[in-house]
Length: 214
Image (cartoon, rainbow, N blue to C red; front, side, top):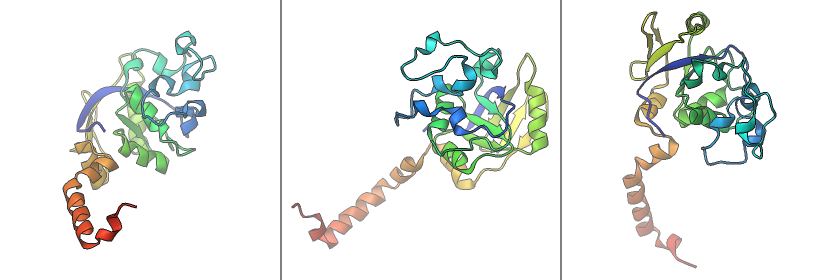
């Protein structure tokens, strides 16, 4: 998992509440569990005017000109700004994979669905909860032709901008430490590899009959 320390990037304003995981990555793209290749299908039904699928050449599909990620300057955004209850619906982890594959490192919203929120930390995407008035202010700043660039410092738990207020945010201490180190659950477990090997060796010495080959 890619570590998150400080990230500076362009903000894409997605002014919608209750965006569910099927809108983030539709069900027809869930056949793979490799965590890669989902970026082109992020917000698929919103980004394209034509129906999509794994057997459809995405290069031949027409973009929806009204969708924010199909407009300049937001095509290259790496921070998503959205509204309440983002990531609701099914528990598919593919939704976070699609955001990460597209290039998003953080999502800012007033609230998130619980499972989606947890999945973000497991995959290196930082979900940031801000107050409604702070989100409103960021939307106002982001909706301009020049765009809005934010600097997110996870260590300091601070969002800052060149010409505007800064915002603090809260993150659970354990999750914060794991993201700073770039460790998912497997990575955290592997940090204890030496202790695990020692335990297994002692276990084999104490109860050798458990390790007999049949």
